[in-house]
Length: 439
Image 1 (cartoon, helix red, strand yellow):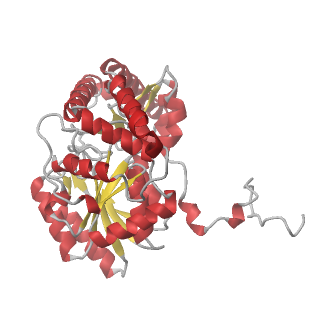
Image 2 (cartoon, rainbow, N blue to C red):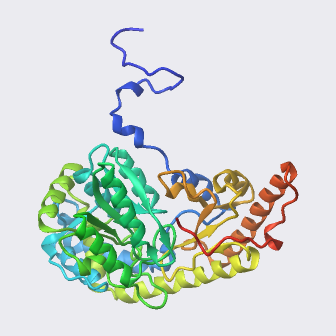
Image 3 (cartoon, rainbow, N blue to C red):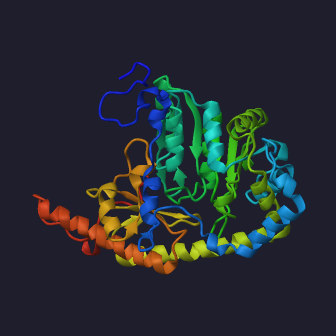
């Protein structure tokens, strides 16, 4: 081989450029959620896996009308480069959206991004050095963990229960990491209808978590894609409504309008905002002017609050269908019962492995996301995230019935090879597990 050829690593890797990649690419890997998309998109499979919004509940004519008006009235602007901070009018309208969660802010401190996940990536780029630590709930959003790992940072999980993050666990984690000389860069949290657990941080705990962060000079990164999608009572006000200088707030139109437009935002303290704009310009030059103007037109001319109410009704009906099906088909398991959002967190018997069960599930034509996807430390082996946002209530019921077959089939298999005696099926076994343990 010529000396001009790129170096290759040892082993059987087929990528000739393998030895040239930056060290940080070692943290890039396909998530278990992404790996499921190809299978879950097959029409015969009931997908309880991906958190895809029910865009069918958004009247298409409203979107077409907004797009047509943008092109007829602002076409030359919509098709051109724009500001790295975002369209000024849309930033003003975003203030109205955030006001529904108690946030008072200036449009000058809003930075529009290509979806809120892009904002999460920009914040990580600004703050994380190799070896830094991010604190996050356990379990936590799968792609956030991937992003932190891509910047060679470690995610350390804070325990949760039915009221959200446990403040005492947060204190213990901070003390342990400080004693070990580790650098904690920020606390990442989804306080309302959390992904994947579906639980909501109580008002009292919001105050306590912010107090702990202030005492330890730790920045809080509040990710809030689901906060407006409550079923009955709204969640407590956003963390950013309580604390301004110590919280970066991430929002998105993906769940309350449509994800295809890829428009999100960050609300940040002034100094951080300046760096976010620079990072945004370095990454994408400017977020899509067309997408921003369509959403701005939609917010300006349509009763968007009524549309959010419609989404709430759709998701509430689907959540109730899932809870009812779980109670019927898997009555002896435990699960969370979210008051909003997209997800239910199911706890299996401790001897089952949700990731190992997945091929059986695909064969049974049902897809879910294994709990291990939501932990950086290998946790969640006997947990499953079930998404009720996309399938119809009828499909949800079929999917949960198929899931029962999967779980009972796995138990039968273990019983066949077990040397410790027979094991009962889910339908007649009473598990001694406590209420959903999210630790």
